[in-house]
Length: 127
Image (tube, rainbow, N blue to C red; front, side):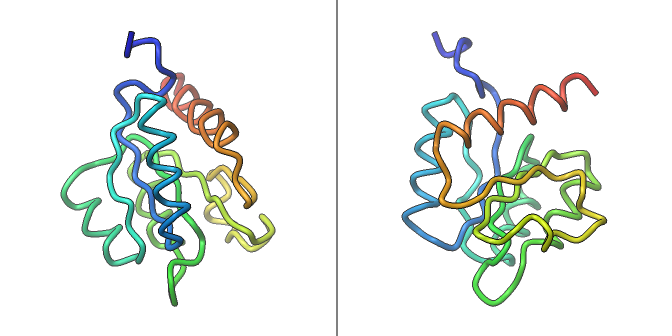
């Protein structure tokens, strides 16, 4: 049965500073078959988690406390890891060097989160 789940076998890094949203995302992505790295509420924690395990996909809030997640996004994209920015900000805030990242506006629909992550996984697998 688990092989039929859309994100079966994917390791997903979550960097989100809203504890409740991070837990909702983690629970939803687990139910879709993903293994979760995190969630990390600050950039330093996310970077440390990336040093321990390489994610297949990542969902990042742009603002992580007093920092942004742009450097995390750069590192992940540089390593070939698809990134989804989930944020309340307009997509225009994302620097041009991160244009390969996907974008999802908050408030996040959990079904849209799974669909977006599945699309990213499929695009990565086709590349």
